Each structure stands twice: as structure tokens, then as C-alpha cells.
Image (cartoon, rainbow, N blue to C red; front, side, top):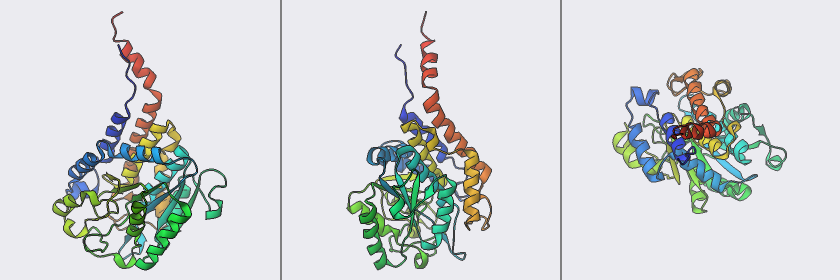
Length: 345
């Protein structure tokens, strides 16, 4: 009998299944069409969206390469970021650094940079100025990005010229709608305080740099490929649907979870479980994010929740993902032995 090794496609399917489990405020209380959005993204990717994103990164990114990780969604009335986004960006940055030896550069509004720094450092990475990024291991950089459109054009070209990134990843980052403005989930406009990172994404795509967009509602940067479904099936979708596309669109129950799915697939592909965190580490990341000022958008509080989902539930999801990463590395020989035992002696 021919032995069977663990198939990355099966791993990707399992991870997609976990990160799209409909157990958050948006999908339970509001009945968002998560399954329909995810199915559309899978069709575009030709299979698992998390695995497709991880494969793209593994193919395009090598040791020492820069990757821009865009995140941060400022909550109207607070002027503070929500907990969904910066944590996922930090987990993604860790996977890029530990798994590929890449140098992640976090991009957000100036006001959110301190929160991004808290999360990236809590993920185990070491901050560095631009001239120190290649000094030592597991360094990361941070950069604010302008709210003004004209300044954003200049900043985008400067960032791309300076870092020559091999990929851009947007995680729970506002994306402009058909009207050219940015919107919160309630349809209200947030353009006046939102950095125009669509311009950075657009310039990268013009330069042929691969892009990945991660979102959970449809108003996030990189979700343009599913804008049609968002416009017709999501409440206020005709207003909030982001139009900028990405090479790979990752739809998840919570955007952080989409980033976790990519990171877990990447850890499995490179055979390094340290490239993905665990549940206890997840709790520390949420605590660091809240301590740095982030708010749970559902509760409107400084509490250890993400999109109305408590830290324990998030940690359990991370441990389930980690079990798949460990399975992919540990159980291949056991599975083959088990299958071989079926043979008639």
C-alpha cells in the first residue's frame, strides 16, 4: 500500500474551516454572509485562502526581505484603535520573521504606531530604526502613514523605494469605498482621520509587488474582489464595500483570525512550529494591545475582547490552529505507520 503524507491542501482546508467558524458578534448577532464571502474568496484563490496566502509569501519572501504589514482601524468618537488588527499584524510579523527570516515593517496612522509597537514587541520581536533593521535577528520597523492624500502619494513612493518590499499584507485596515471615502461598519465616514493606505497598496500593485488583504466585514483594504457580495448581502454594504483588490483575499470570522490562519499555514509549510504562537501567548498579546489603548469595538470598552469575543475564546482558537501546525510536523510517520498496519500480513 502506498503511504500517504500530510497534504498541505488538507491543512489549509482545516485552517480555513477554523478561522471562518461563525462565533463572533458579526456573524451570530448580525447574520453576516461569512460563508458566502469565504466561498467567493476560495474560488478566486483556487482553494484554501490561508494556504494560498502562505504559499505566496513562502515563494516571494526570502531571508532579509522586507514585508509591509498594514493595520489599525481607528474607532470614531474615541480616536483609538480597535483590538482587531494590530494583534493579527503582530502574529503575522512574527511568522514572517521566525518562519522566513524576513523583516516586517508595520504601517498605520501615527497615533496607532504605539499600539502596533506594543503588539509587535509582545509577539517577541525587537524594534529597530531603519538603519538597524539588518542588525541582529527578529527585528521589526514601524512607520506612520499620512491622512492627507497628496502626502500619502509621496510617502507611498518613499516607503517602496526605501524598503523594496517583497509583499504587502493588510489586516483589518480601512479600505475606500466606491465613493472614494472610508467607512466604519455603521456606514459613517471616517476619511478625515484615516491614513490613505489604499494609495500605498495601489502603488505596490502597479509595481508588481504581491498583496494580501484580510478582512471580516468587507470595508477593509484588499477586499475589493468580493465587493459585489458585500454590496448586496452585507448591511450598508453598498456604502461600505472596499474597492481596492489584493492578489489574495482572506475572509475570516475576525480579521485577526485570518492573519492567524496565514501564519499557521506558513509555520506548517516551513516546518517550524515556533513561527506560530499559542493560546497563552494570545492572551498576552490581547492584554498588551488593550494596555496600549485599544478598545473592543463591540463592548466599547478597554477589555480583553476582540470583536466581542473574549480572550479565552481567542486563545482556544489559537490552540486549535497550533494543534494543526504540530500535527503537520509530528504525525506524518505515525499516520504512515497506521496506514501500513492495514495491510494484510
